[in-house]
Amino acid sequence: MMLRRVLSIVVIVLCLASSFGTSAKTLRMAAWFEEPADLIEAFEEATGITVEYTYVPDSRAYLEKVTLWAISGTLPDVLYIPYWGLFPMTDVGVLHPLDGFLSEDFEGDFLPQGILSFQRDGRQFGMPWELNPMVIIYDQRIFERYALATPDDYVRNDDWNAESLVESARKTTKLTPDRTNFETIGLVTWSNAINRFTSFIWVFGGDVLAEDGATVLLDQPGSIAALEQLASLFQEERVFMATGQRGRYGLEFMEILAGDITAMRGADIPLLNNIRMENSDLARNVGVVPMPLAPDGAPTSGLIVHGIGIAASSEQKEEAWQFIEFAMNNVAQNASIPARQSQVADWIDYISREYGFNVMNYVQGLEKNLRLQPRAINDQVEAILNTYVDRILTQGVPVVTAVENAIREIGAIL
Image 1: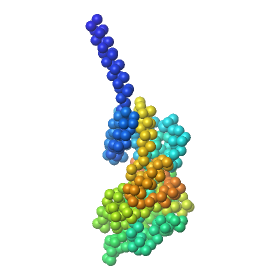
Image 2 (image 1 turned 90 degrees about the horizontal axis):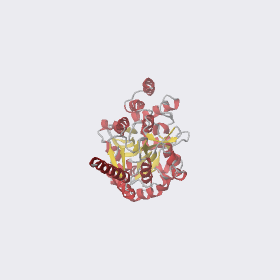
Image 3 (image 1 turned 45 degrees about the vertical axis):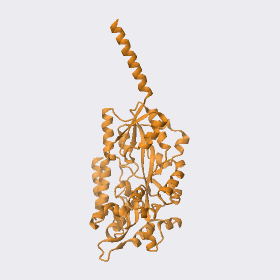
Image 4 (image 1 turned 120 degrees about the vertical axis):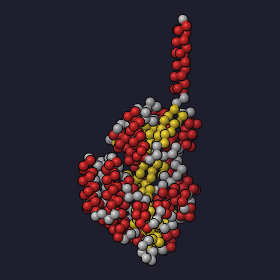
């Protein structure tokens, strides 16, 4: 009798514990950036759902961690997706298709390029978190100093192209009297890695990768010609500079990106955050224009988009989607452009208020200037491309030699 009574008490306690567990839900999520504490707190207050956040420094290390979680069966419910992470994450099946959650009105509020960033084989595996297009950020003070037409002037006159970009760089590059260093640099590129530098290859009529992420297009005649011209601008004329070249001139990374020495910066738009923090005077005097169109009129403002999705193994997919919807309703409080078109006006007001300049002209032509950046099918392909493009631009390796070596190495691993 006593044993039966004890067992009855145990059953009651287990039932109560189970009931409590279902009413107090906890979502687990992970990403490679610092916890979005304000967003999480607002979501918890609105829904009563607790969120546990795991921060993994560096997006590459994060993808490795996702693989380990998948193997051990401990994937978080909500997974942020780096732009280059869609292929590897879907290859191992860690993402749940979102098509069943999407309404026509909700999906229609997003720029098409943002939605396409997380589609594969006709299914939607993530939602765009924010848009980070490649742009030209220029210092109006330098153009005024030399009495030159600005990139915005060229845009307004429908004459913003490779030729006017190069002409602007030539006229704003001033060497020191001994010609060993710079008084002003015409154009600095944030990075010559393919996830950022492809836009410049497009501008000059070339291409890097096909949509399959594996077919290399650098050996096409237009691509060879584009790389030859770019190599000359970086090496011989010295009117373009990669950040990797700064050391030979004794310049610091942020000195050339957020300092007063550079006329134009080819970078994704979050560089405005760095400029705002590093150089308030420059922040009040910058202009932002899209990358010049390609010779055939194609857009070249390469779009880097990070997204958010649901783990295939999650047992709380409805709650995970609830968080994604909630996150999509919050306007980004930084220089990254909101993925939803209905939020762009509020973002323009925010940038005007907090950064002190008007991006209306840039945003009005946003959609027609955006183009999805190429995504390498794996890290090895991307690393090979990065290596050989860098050798062309900063080390003077002949273009044809570098391209042939890159294609040979990629062919050996695919």
